[in-house]
Each structure stands twice: as structure tokens, then as C-alpha cells.
Length: 64
Image (tube, rainbow, N blue to C red; front, top):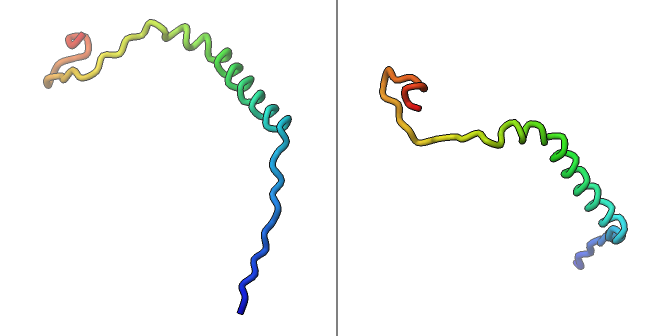
């Protein structure tokens, strides 16, 4: 018994559609960056120290 399979044709998106989607993504990321700029400015000089072990009873101020 022969096996037959249906193969559907999938049309590839046109170059202009692909470029439009890429441009949308770039603009979207740029807008997100601009919107987050005040928060980034606010936190640009923050320093995070990790790996310090606190002994029982010590407070953060004493660790610093």
C-alpha cells in the first residue's frame, strides 16, 4: 500500500515585511531604553557588594 502525504506550501515573508518587523523591534527597544533612562540615571552609581557573611547579631551598618 503506497503512503501519500500532503505537503502544504508555506510562502516565505517578503523582504519588506521582514525589514519592517526588524525596524519595529529596534524602535521598540530604543523606546524602552528612553523610558527607562531616568531609572538608569538614578541607579548608575549604585554599588553592590556580595559574598560577605554576617555573624549572628551583626547588622548591615556594622558589615559596611
